[in-house]
Image (cartoon, rainbow, N blue to C red):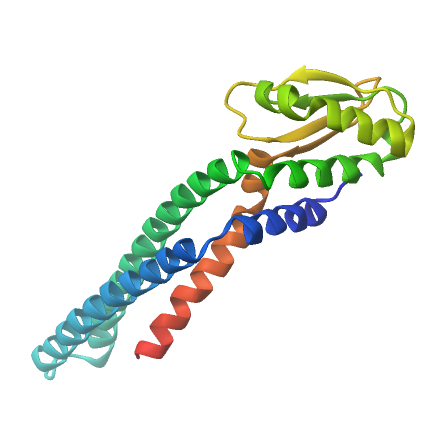
Amino acid sequence: MVTIEQKISLFQKLLHRSMTEKFIEELEALRKEHDEKFQKNKALTDKEAEEILNRSLKKAGAEKVELLSKARIGLKRESMSVKEKCFNTFMDRLKKEIENFVQSDRYEAYLLSLVKEVSGQEQLSGRPVIYLTARDIERYGDGIKRELKESKQWEVSFKTADSNITGGLLAEAPDGRVRINLFVDALLEDSKPYIMQVLFHALETGEENGE
């Protein structure tokens, strides 16, 4: 079976191939936008904290701590809100970049690399069913059949994937008991935690450097 780690690894290869210099610059712009908002909110929070301290000199220490804690929580919430907006913007741009990649000349080589991946799964041996977009069946169906015939002596049949699928493939064993989902959309969904981790780390690094 193809593991989630393997699927993510395949998708990371797609990301590296599809990321252009312009796309990297857009990510850097997002990071800078987040840094500017974070520093602005931090300055406001620091000012509010100072005012609270000045007003609270005569109050009990516990009350001052509580007021400062509330201010810091507010800053963290605002920071998380900005990060989520950055993530959503990043994902929207990434989806557009992937759509462009699927339409490019480089996509065929990527699709055939997925075919080679599923050809190593003996659970699919015989006459597997390959789900592809109608466009991919028309353009690459013959090449996929030839690849599986030459490498595994498999006779493959095709079915059209749902219309909302961007690209990639899903392979199903002849008895229907094994399905390997390598649709681009599924790989993107599996990769969201990884993408979020990398993006948030970049944003947090900017916060630390700005302190």
